[in-house]
Structure formats: structure tokens, C-alpha cells
Image (cartoon, rainbow, N blue to C red; front, side):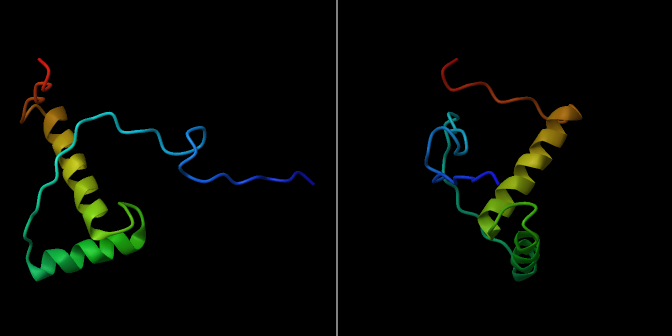
Length: 80
């Protein structure tokens, strides 16, 4: 039987790749209904493990859809 060795997620060899994209922190206010929906979405684990991750994933997916459909243009990089 082959022994599997688990490594800590911070290990550069096996962990999630580092996000080299510059990020900013924003704060949003939502209704109780939206908050409840985000809780239910996060509970599925399909869009993240918590409300913040679910909200970020849903916004990112929607922005990609708008870009794909040509309804918005891609933002210019900060260094350009």
C-alpha cells in the first residue's frame, strides 16, 4: 500500500499559486435577503467557504460574463 504524505498548504510546491494581481479591499452593504442568499451559497461550498468568498466569486463571474458579451471593456493595467 502506498503511503500518501500530506503537506501544509503554505508549502510552495503544493499550495495554491500566489496571486500576483494587485488587490484592493472594499466594503459593501447588502440587504438581509442578500446576506441570507450568500450564506446559503457559501454553505454549498461551490462558490467559496464564506459569504465574502462567495460574493467575490459571483462578482468576478458576472464581470467576466459582461466582458465576454462586450458590455464592458477590460480595465487597463495600473502600470500602463
